[in-house]
Image 1 (cartoon, rainbow, N blue to C red):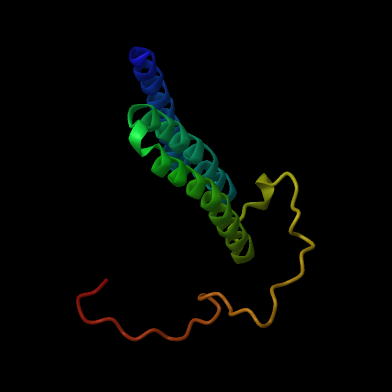
Image 2: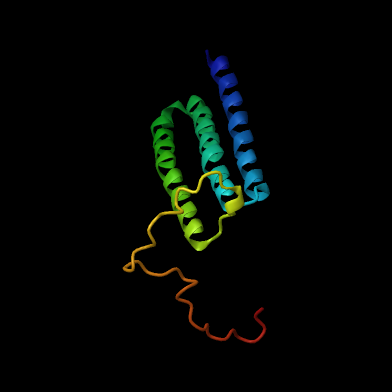
Length: 133
C-alpha cells in the first residue's frame, strides 16, 4: 500500500510540475494579455492541485493544511485573473483581432465615482537624482 501511494505521488508530482512549467512557458510565449491571463490561471492552479495531492499522499499528517491551500488557491486565482483581464481590457491592452467574441464592447463606461487609472491621473513626476536612468 505504501509503495502504491509513493508511485501515485510521484506521478502526480511530475504531472503537476509539467503543468506548472507549461504555464510558465505560456506566460512568456503567448502574444496577448488574455492568453497570458488564461495560462497564468488555469494550468497553474491544476498543476498546484496535483502537487498538493502528491504532498498529501506523502504528508498525511498535514493534509488539512494542504486542503486549505488548495481551497484558497481555487478561490483567489480566478478572481485575480478576472480583475487583471478587466483592467487590461479597460486600459486597451487587448488585441481585438484575436478576440472571437467581445462581450464587453457594449459595457457601460466606468462609474465617475471610481478613481481614474494612474496613467490618466499622471502629473509631472519629480526630477530624478543625477545618475538615475
